[in-house]
Amino acid sequence: MKVIIFGASGMVGQGALRECLLDPQVTEVLSVGRSPLAQSHAKLRQLTTPALDDLSALEPQFAGYDACLFCLGISSFGMSEADYRAVTYDLTLAAARPLARLNPAMTFIYVSGAGTDSSEQGRSMWARVKGATENALLALPFRAVMFRPGAILPLHGIRSKTRAYHLLYTLFKPLWLGALRLFPNQVTTTERVGLAMLAVARRATPLQIIEPAEINRLALPSST
Image (cartoon, rainbow, N blue to C red; front, side):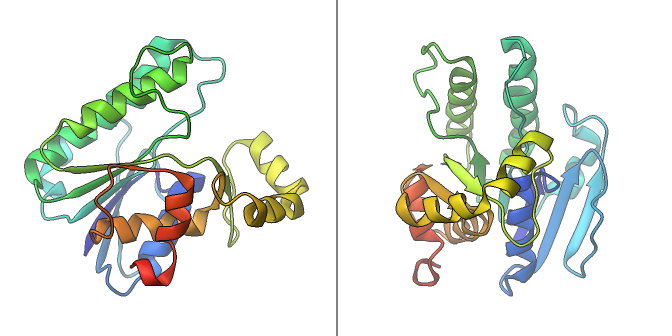
């Protein structure tokens, strides 16, 4: 299986990349982002571009892939709806549209969030924009699956790029581990998200929207 990852430098993207590189059934991983990754691997190829809103020059290199794990995203804190939409909606569709055209049999997995508003009419700005993005992806001519994780615990040395989140995870890691056991319907890990993505890419579920409990279930070895 050949996989493209957008946002491999972020917390969720790091987890997805780790599981792809460890999986013997994944033969090639293409990372697309604004800056190069620090790591190297025999299966890993990187494309860097400062303009993720226009990937036309890179399109010839996007053909022949089986799955895309779209982990690129930012917090909406302090952002206007227009600015948040430009990153969340516009950048996602700028990647998804050419991929759908070049790889109609592809599985495109989008990391959304718990509480996303599919109606696009709610009061929460981020949830409306995420909902609009999900709906646009589901309308494209490939298999699109939305991941809506709740709280995500970083494992295996993975860290959030947001300083406040990193401190929160570090200081309260024992509590997070307890929450993972006590609240499996709300809490997952970077490892489980990555494993669940690969399970979905192998057609392990017909669902279009994957909530935290399903993420944790799909991460089990029997689900792959």
